Length: 368
Image 1 (cartoon, rainbow, N blue to C red):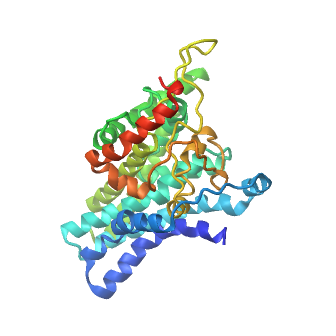
Image 2 (cartoon, rainbow, N blue to C red):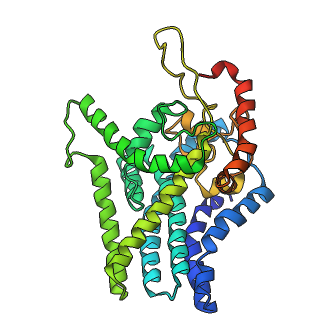
Image 3 (cartoon, rainbow, N blue to C red):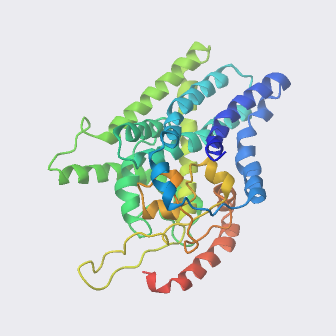
């Protein structure tokens, strides 16, 4: 059962198929296009509340076995062909289904939400690993939602500067999710190029388009877009529908990722060291610099992403090994619920700002 429950990541893959099948039977194309948002932002929060948290950690005797188990390594890799299939299936359905404009938008949003979970989330797991296969699969998953630059910015930027003013993916106390996401959308792709230039310079190499990994991933995104165009044209729809569909689902997936980033680090800061050889530098990242959430259902859905505190403290640790720590700052709910909460800034601040203040009081000696 322990292994079978990790197959829950397949749920988002199944939702567009279920939506299409239900629409065929009922004829309610527009209504069924909303099944994915309904699951994400209504049913999953309810299931998190009903099932509750799982704070159990793998035993030390199990860690080596879990780390080498091919089963757990394979599941994130499976997301690459699975999301490619969902992406093309979504393009075909959009071309042939009798959606109204509202239903068409809802369908594109639904595919983008699936991409946020089935493409970006396993990509995040894979790009942190040491094997070339995993890192390349992670890049291709990110390319499927037009966010290949995330691979560079996340590894060379976010994980280095997290919980400091230098990190564009750490939300400031009092910052609205809307301002945060808009800043991320224009800043992070440019920051990826900047970080890539700096990395090449350290290797005494000059930056060029042909040498750029970022440009390579965006070229792969163009390939995905072309496939969507081929699918829509084969189904009798105009070419521009495939382009609009691909861009639309990408924007939704990226937006979901950045909202999650907002939730994961809101208001947290690292202490600046004042003495010694590292004076003026931030303290090393540990389990107090990211919000943790151990709600069982969403963690299984997201390859344990919500155990984010341990992930930032030990970035290459594989998802079955990520641990819950009581001393990490704890979110009051799972990510699906927190995304809904973040969409209402006054309510978000009422819930989260006192938690940030309480955590800062507890760890006052760690603050900037």
